[in-house]
Image (cartoon, rainbow, N blue to C red; front, side, top):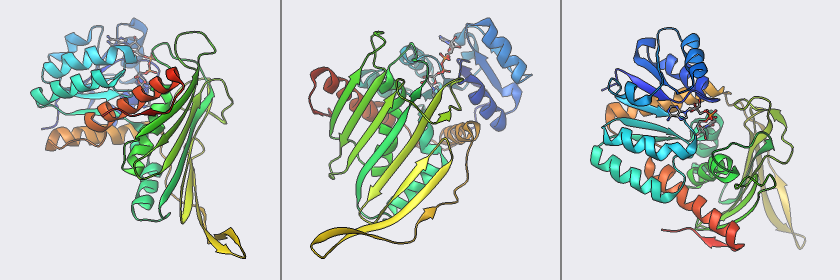
Length: 342
Ligand SMILES: NC(=O)c1ccc[n+]([C@@H]2O[C@H](COP(=O)([O-])OP(=O)(O)OC[C@H]3O[C@@H](n4cnc5c(N)ncnc54)[C@H](O)[C@@H]3O)[C@@H](O)[C@H]2O)c1
């Protein structure tokens, strides 16, 4: 059954993007927004006349079948736990929880309540990432070897989390989704230059059971290349390179470019030399943030309707992802390569 009403909890920097996406899926009367800040409620009501805006999310819960949580990370677990226990389906922005223990707790509650819980793992729903995954799954770049991601640039450091939870989470998840594996070891190096108690630079190297290696660079202390589409005033890069035995694909999510390389190494004249085939730019449609969030939320509604497990559910994007990030924190603290916990 399609929810007759949804409650968006939080209307901060990402609030308008979610509200615009909901407005493409549901009529205004079916949308409520909760935020304790009066200016946030005024802004939401002005953007979508006809919606209901409340200060306390519990006041909106009585008449909503599903909630969309986009509040600071340190509030995610408490709000999600209460909404689940009251039988509401939950869309929970990344990072779903602060750690794996919180994610396991939500998983147990969701099992008891029989509700759908989906994480806001944006890049899984980006058309270019989906096209790349299709190429990889079809063997289009051969056997995977190395995945590189850069999610970095000069931007404000959020108060609720560091670069691991806030930024590395995106590509650590994306790389697990592309490889179809959970990382088994992590080596993370982090720095807290601002002295605020969480990292503003995080460099993460992951190995997977198949032998594939990945590296994710995140941080706020190095240059990016493009005005950020989500964070006003920030200049960031969001790009990945995925390489295999038969080629590679590069995506620049900000520039909306996707390039395919067809190349393999052959042994000749005593050396391993690259042999190039025809590659070049790929024509995969772009997607603005509202369109990507709309795709995520449409999937959420479909899972509620059909009862199927969401792509970006609690098992992979809650517990599984948090186990990798927990291991990254331990690795950084101990300056060692760390095994991802079971
Ligand atoms: N998927 C993505 O690409 C993406 C992009 C940006 C943000 N996010 C995630 O979305 C979430 C929100 O990010 P943001 O940048 O909008 O944060 P923000 O700090 O700008 O806004 C958070 C809002 O939540 C409100 N809030 C706090 N406690 C609340 C409560 N108990 N009930 C209702 N509202 C409450 C605050 O008043 C504020 O308006 C974070 O988890 C963040 O990681 C995801």
